[in-house]
Amino acid sequence: MSDSAPCVAPAADVADGADVADGADIADATPPRATLLLPALAALAAVTLWGLSFPAMKVAVQALGPMPLMWARTMVAMALLAPFTARLFPSRTVAVATSGTLVRRGFWSGVPRRHKLLLLPTVLLQPCLYFLCESNAMQLTTASQAGVISASVPLLVGAGAWLFLGERPSPRLWLGVAFSCAGVAWLTLSGGAGTEAAPDPLLGNLLELLAMACAAGNMVLVRKLSAHGGLGSFRWNPWTLTALQTLAGALFFAPGAYAVLAGAGQWPADVLLAVIYLGAGASLGAFGLFNWATSHLPASSVGAFINLVPVTAVGFGWLWLGETLNATQMLAAVVVMVGVGLGTGRSR
Image (cartoon, rainbow, N blue to C red):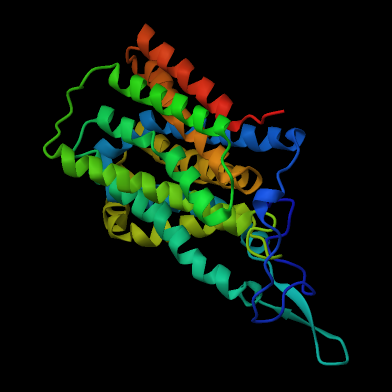
């Protein structure tokens, strides 16, 4: 499960307790087209898993409520990651004294200070604040309005990558973002206003926008922590970052633990299967794959894949729940896919 690159730099590259020197600007080290295929497929698989989570979420959240569900799914993900703890957080061997004696040091002793400082906002933005804002937003506004706002993620990621990572978005990228945002807006509005209660749409839309800002900020930080040259010679394994995000989510949503432990034995089979999928597929699988893709693709490009989430959600809703997928929604989905193709493609 660990990435092919080490999540800690060799002992010779990292001074004990000291920061490492900054590497080259990651914007100047764009990989060739052939190396982008697997990261692009990983991002596509991630958004498919996220889209598939919507029917599962409908089943589980009605039975458990937001906080217990979020804690339960993070615990499923943590149980799956536990056997790989030694590989995700390896110790390192360093030479001490003039004799060259080798000493085993813990994982955290090799993490530069700047990385430790960036870890807190990374795991706080997602999954903690992201899920907190979005779960409350969906109780205050309609799904169609929230879907339109979710189209802002690529723009926010592109702006963040430009400001903090030095990436230079091309006109083709912005054209792709425009297409995909227009497609998502068309897709989410084409089904009508819906029947969900929206007691405070203004506050709900603001919370949804904050959730998207959290997602975009997390993508930029993951890119900086895990990409080659992103923050010196030390580079995080994306699966290690996923494990830390999962642990942070379990602690953040711990108030829902009592309800889970008290009623887990009484869950219907469909609720239990939904929770297992949300933890293994949506939380662990999707976040792990997307973090890995983000470590290999420019943040501004990988953000465009987010606009496929509502497309896959509508598709699986149609397949599993019998929701209508009309001709207009199908055309809107095509527009989103065209936008993603433009945004993630490279000019000759």
